[in-house]
Length: 364
View 1 (tube, rainbow, N blue to C red):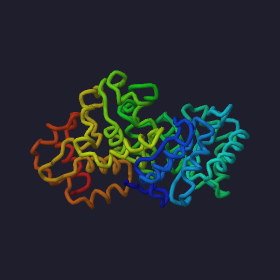
View 2: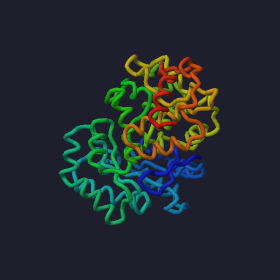
View 3: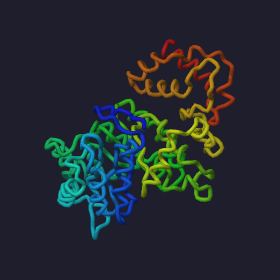
């Protein structure tokens, strides 16, 4: 397992977490899946469960683990009727549900308490003005939450919440279909979505990724919104390459699903390579570096993807990005104009020219 530090905290979070929205509590499957995930080093769980009984399964699966060894995100707006998830903005129901589920899940506190599924401006206004944000802050003051977070599919909403500096973590849907404006939740234009990831990283707000496979559609060529099928590993790598991303949260319904996710860590660079997207990318998305490093190997050993990422972040005022760039072993100034990266780039980025601009910007 690999871990990434939460920018606004000390938590070391597994880059692959577990979403529990689709796992149905039949027999001991929830308990078995959670226990197996923990045994594989997964330490981050999204407790937005579709089935209410799944909380008891989580409690059983994690009972032998010290509470400080794993992290959970819980949602102010996920409530239950007849044992199944429903959406609510009723403050009283939200309060009752949250504190009930702390006990049902055996978690004592939520590491991240979410302003849940805010996709429209009216939703944001209600959450900010009708007591839900105040309740999240109260939970933090009472020690029942460590961080306040946001879940949304809408870049405009996310950017507004970032502007107000309300959160430490953002849950957002990241995958090639949505980023290229294809699919049900593909809100925002290509540039707007890319700018959001960079802005979050520049502000030190982490991202936990939902819908990395676009509801499974990207894994099936017949259903894929972009016309090509990707593997689980390619989708995970695509999301983890994005600025700001701390963890990706695929759904899992069995220990076997966890094993399939863990194949990411033994995959070769070729198996992780998602440059096939260059054959399916809309015209307006071409010319933008997505940090895939398909242009490697550079004969001068420049990590072209990472150099681009630090440059994009530095342009937003991220001082740490400059420091990270300066600490690289090889810099853009070493480019010898061989044109290898331009020829190899599936997204038609003028990387050679960009190396000169980056070298001029950083002075090295």
